Image (cartoon, rainbow, N blue to C red; front, side, top):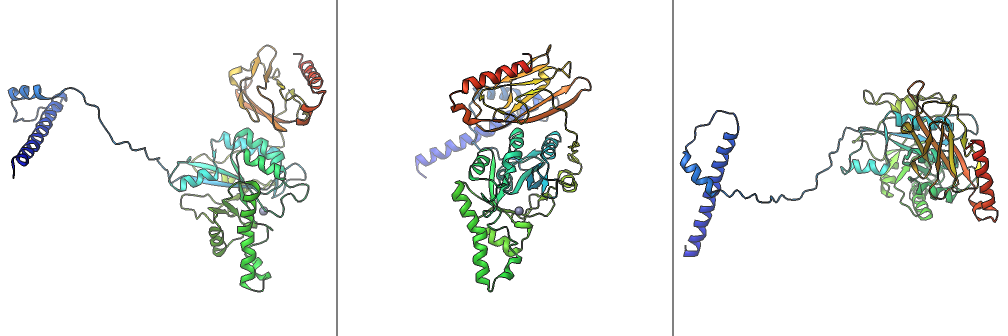
Length: 438
Ligand SMILES: [Zn+2]
């Protein structure tokens, strides 16, 4: 070993010795700091003092490797996928049609029970170990593409700020007068909706096989139904279609493998059960919610000891709406209206216990006159969509219970371009103020 090598070795030894010595001192110091009985020490006080002088007391910045904290993924979460069809008051409630009031009360019940609504995107982030989701949560899906999804469900979903997935079958789209048109689909996408495919024809994809003479003919047809519908929806609406809903919930292992091969990341069935971390993603269970009975709703929203069954308000007896402006279901021209609500029927209501939400604005800072009981809010920017809804909740001082109601109104967007626009909105504002004696 040459001189340099020797020096290096000595240096290392010196450093090692210093580290060892500091360690001994630290151990001693730590044991002094505690109330424990003093351990037997081989170092006497004199050498301790001597060593203390050598210990560098200057704190040095600690350099720890920067590791982003890994999200804590609770794999025991349970997810209910709800499946709706029509949300409409046209025609009586059926297995496939739920009244608008009942749909709204279900959305409210989820909120009241503290059950979070998540998107399929969040669900897959959870399945990939990237993002935690609540212990119990719900995914909202709507099948087929009836225009009442846009007309009736969307204002409610917006009001609650719930994400949702809607499955369209392309033969239905833009067809009869009761289906979604392209503009409505685009607005659904812009409002937190995820688009999924529900095939082209909505035929039974498994049993349709017998209609074909050979395997090749069936497979070609199936490829159009699964892959073709995805490509056509993606092109038309410039979005990614990653989930498939089996028409009538009919599927097989073969069908599931075809859906996977077509580039989807999931497929939903109509098997009423909770989804969990282990669920097969091409056979996801789903509770179809019927408008004429609550069996699946109750099963889907009960999570055993966690949350419990969600109670639904009796939708036949909605809260009586007080005097409001714009009037329920009315059409207004003013795109900067003052929204007014007369709460004088509830004397003693406090401003801090009132919440007002407006489509596109979320919670808004309404003013409340405790003397007259008039709540009002002037819109702060022009209303840009046709359909709006206002949601009010407050604590009723007579019984301490939460009370809420909502109503829709329509904005005539074309009126803005009419020469008599300013005249029209002046008349509107005057009659509103008169109506409220404001
Ligand atoms: Zn369907």
